[in-house]
Length: 276
Length: 310
Image (cartoon, rainbow over all chains, first blue to last red; front, side):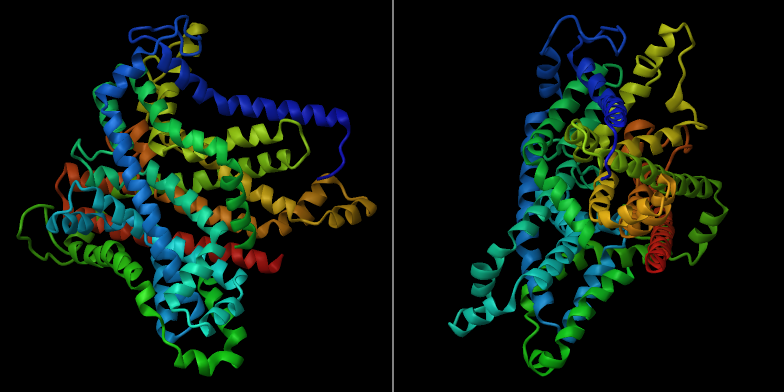
């Protein structure tokens, strides 16, 4: 950050505002579209003259968004909890015990990170059908856990190696605590910052996931928000006002979480990138 | 990749002299990672390997029987003009988004690295799309670009011009997809560059000022070389994200018209579910895995080497 003249500062502030406005355009259009009555063909740029929540009620009901919210929440919460529980435990063993086996296992996880998940689509679909997990929450949960496990282990292992002192665990072990006891009572609480990062990254992606959900959750009873929305768009492509209302409602929870916890979203990413 | 696999060795080297005998006697604690290994093998490794096997068959995706037909699907793939169209699009999405996200993201970071009043507000607005589903982001931009009642055509109509069908025009719509993907994820690049810029010591710039360096010289000789680690992360993240693009395409064009804007992901999806051509879909999957692997490794090695030079 260099010293700049106040005139330059005003110019740069102006530029930043223009950029901000540009980035707000699609959201402005989303909001005006969602508020206008179906059949209102005034310009998308014009602000609606009447405020009407009818679109929201209609979209909520027709797209079955209530049900989709519950499904999405169940899948996101369960997957995030399993990721943190199994991922942190795995990373602890891999980071602390450098046996030959553990090195290979760690390499397996790191190697899996470069496999594009979609390339396994065909056999995975068959596997899921064969074991009877089609259209269940469980398949979406397990699949998301698998997709994020390598990154989770990578992040936890790096954090454990660089910041958790071994002496703490050794002292506890002398006191006769079991390995699992040492991990959950002493190590896990110290992992809070990286747990927050893992929780945020994985929740956002799992909440927003479409490409896996569309394969495995086609039945309307288990549909997540993105799948419900895609179906709704297919039926209402001429009634964009309703689609806009549904899209707005589906995005709102994450937007609210983001606005309140912004610090964690941005700091986690920044810290991870500087270290990595 | 090199960086990722090196990490565990580094620590083990450090502790080797003191601990090597003891750690060999210690158990691997394998039961602590067994659940994670099982789930990753079942959902990623096994399907990936089984996919290679299926690529040598004529399986239709649902019947119980199928035949092994050797390299026929591969011959078909290389002779199929759609393959090259789709590979071209995938590369455009990957490389185009990477270039755009890095230039714009670095520009935004340089701007917001100044102590402006609107700084945190601008940062929030630019980052916001990152947390919205790419599918929904695609729909939001659909409201902008749509032929009938789209915001862009509302402007054209205002000036008495003919409305354009941008999303239905195969010469234009792949670029719209690159634009939307960039718009959505440029916030990540910006934050990573901002963090990188803030870690550069002011002393370098002060020394350069004494030597009378121009702004461009400082940018070229101080900022860029010291920003190399951030550039590597952004390049690799963006290229992998762009090559795997799926949701945005489904929302904006559904791959059309015809296959004009199809990426390898959406193409595979159509082959499997719409055309019941599972064997061929698996073959396309193998090609996609190879392309993503080669390009992301090449990018990683190239930028890592640059980091060392700098």
